[in-house]
Length: 115
Image (cartoon, rainbow, N blue to C red; front, side, top):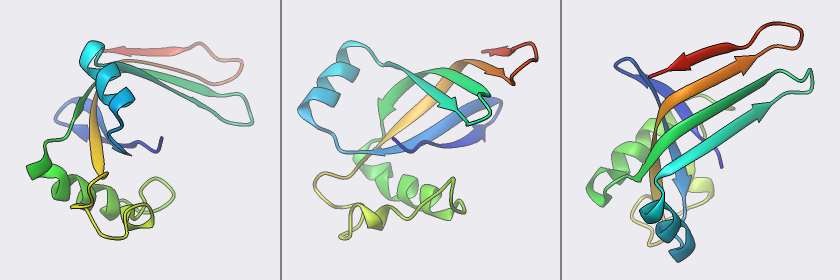
């Protein structure tokens, strides 16, 4: 999973390229919440809880361009995965809206953000 985070108004938001497998579709239909966890070798961590929904087909090209426009290593060219572009049958994007973030550097108190 490679989320590309940005601010949408005052909310941390991400786009995630994903193949809409039947398992993913069923899981998100039943429980549209996800958690992302980041760790670095210094043991600093970030945990993000977010609501997730599939980007509608008519907005897929916009999501593609938004992800592609962010410089690497945060952004990436989705054509690496889908050489035929955003109209590829198995190309999809998830839209994440964070509702809780906990970030902590080793030896420091955690910083909490809630929607």
